Amino acid sequence: MRKVTLFIAMSLDGYIADSDEKVDWLVGHDKNIENMEVYNSFIKNIDTVIMGWKTYHQIITELSPNEWVYEGMTSYILTHQNHQSTSQIFFTDEKPSQLIHHLKRKEGKGIWICGGANVIQQILQEDMIDEFYISIIPTLLGKGISLFGILDKKIDLRLIKTQSYNGITDLIYQRR
Image (tube, rainbow, N blue to C red; front, side, top):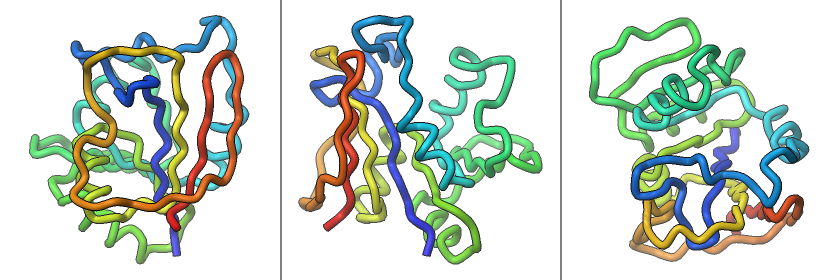
């Protein structure tokens, strides 16, 4: 069965965006050093991306306005807005848990939960995330958009791997 993976970066105090919904602080000690090793390894096993409208909008307007960064993957954008889907980008108002349940029955590689916080928190409440790839950015924001929010139940995890580079620490967990 297809795995559902959360792959995301957060501040040391647990935020995925600052209070202005910006992510320009998602860098290590040196802004010119990138280590894509974990991402490149992860993405080999992914063919489906799920994200909310705000994440999608931020990607197409700020982070990568000139090209869709998930080219070659099937992308599902969770929104109540009416937008025209394409052959690779599908807009849906389906509940995240229903969409995942539907996608897990299909053939394919892994399913990446890309963001945002509301989508992630809904999926966590249903305990549908199999793996967690969390990059801890060496920044304390103090406030902003919380990655996990308040959970109704505990979710036990097993640490699989850690890696540090440029002040960033990657933590990879699986559900126990």
